[in-house]
Amino acid sequence: MSTDAAPRTDDASRWARYVALGDSMTEGLWDVDPATPGLPRGWADLLAERLARRREQPLEYANLAVRGRLLGEIVAEQVPAALELAPDLVSLIGGGNDLLRPGSDPDALAGRLEGAVRRLRATGTDVLLATGMDTRGSGVLRATRSRTAVYNSHVWSIARRHDAYVLDVWGMRSLHDWRMWAADRIHLTTAGHERVTQAALVALGLGADDPAWDDPLEPLPPVARAERLRGDLTWVRTHAGPWVGRRLRRRSSGDARRPKHAVPVVIERTQRG
Image 1: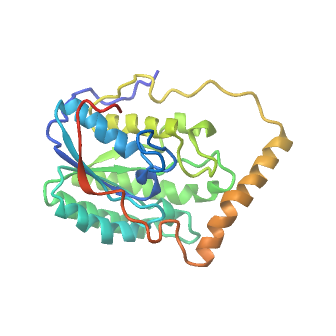
Image 2: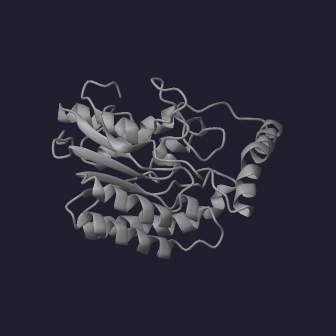
């Protein structure tokens, strides 16, 4: 059972309007909302529902995240839009798409992130940041591990300097299980998004709904080498190849997409999360 949760305070009443900023993780790929098939849900939507429940009154919620967005685009486009909504809480999570690119500079990214955090905190808005995932178990993405570690160190320092919260994705043991990840090996499944929602509650000092929120799953039997190689080849053909093709054409999966909740929606405290 997880023992590193922050003390449970259940003090969510100070957050009447929550705005989520970021890329595909915050947009919610690949967690499909059963109430609206075809529209991604994800951890931020689930967090909004849990906050409304903890507040015991409705919560206004906007999600400006768009898949494929780089940190500079998030800061330039989404932060000003969020400030116009006068939020009490903003989750600002980005940089993952940048770190996937060879030669990306985590120090420069951190400087851009800190500028955005400073701007948000100057208005009195609470800010939730997040670390990147530890990719030591991923063959291809492992190459980004050192850059992500440097960026994560900056995230913790930025949070300390500006009194922000940190969702510690890097430290989540449960996410080292591939059953938490979609077929593209980059985005979370519904189960993975639920685990991140619990981590966000812990980060905000509210306590998790489930005390076993980060417990690893029961291990699966070992996979034969031939089967593993077939899976890797399928992944390269179906997901990695098209991703590289978009990069070469300077295209993004989020081109021409708009945020799913650019205008705040009201989340009732009785909504199922």
